[in-house]
Length: 68
Image 1 (cartoon, one colour):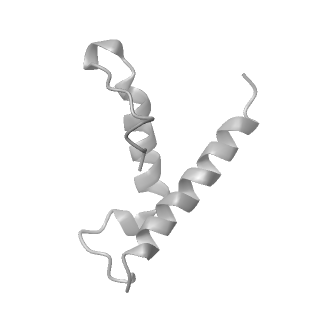
Image 2 (image 1 turned 60 degrees about the vertical axis):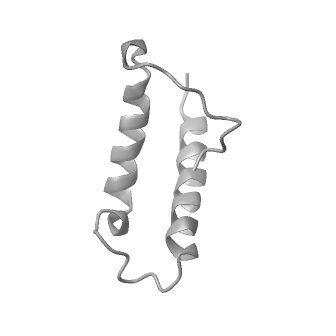
């Protein structure tokens, strides 16, 4: 879901892959629909895509609210 112009490749040795793994885990935990092998309740492909975009927006808003 990241545009190719914003994507940066990193090696496993850099340790930055753990951030993406944590995000994927959080996405699977909060959006149970994505864990299933099929999208039984999604009549259109735009529904799960919208779900992911909505989740990312809320997730980023939540991270900005955390004190650094």
